[in-house]
Image 1 (cartoon, rainbow, N blue to C red):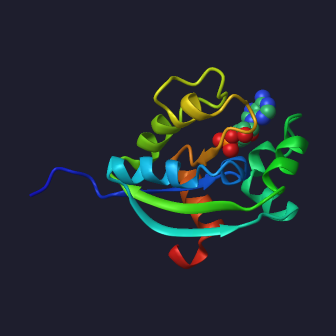
Image 2: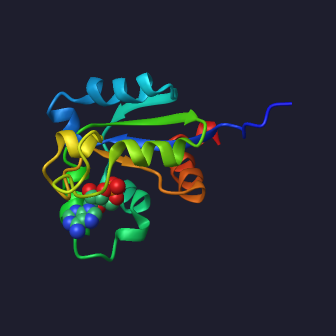
Image 3: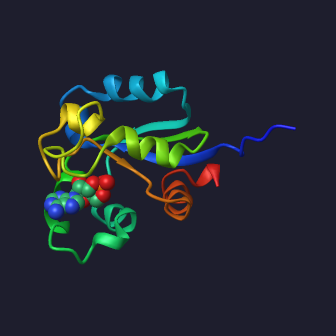
Length: 141
Ligand code: CMP
């Protein structure tokens, strides 16, 4: 009998700054080389209402209005990744929120110099992954 747990899923957004800078391939490549599976992938833009739903926990924060403008300001790539402990693995790969402080070797640490335009979003828990996957890819839920 295998001792490994069933694979998890997480929701990842490759944000408009990454698309604009031509970094989608670089970022997807890191996830692929890690051994994670891409279960779904779409390029689309978010409108304001959708941004409010995605960032429901942040809508009252002072940084939300410019975050909303940034996230609705151009196309992004939304994807579902799966793999062993994928939620924690991907959070480690993207690094801490502020690209200026994120560790070298992480996506933000290597490629971002901003607290807002930080290239990637990833679900931070099993519950948020379920909620975000249902929002972005209802056909998978
Ligand atoms: P993300 O992982 O998508 O989750 C919330 C986002 O809000 C975060 O990445 C950043 O893009 C942004 N963010 C979080 N904290 C700040 C902050 N203090 N100032 C500006 N943007 C922030």
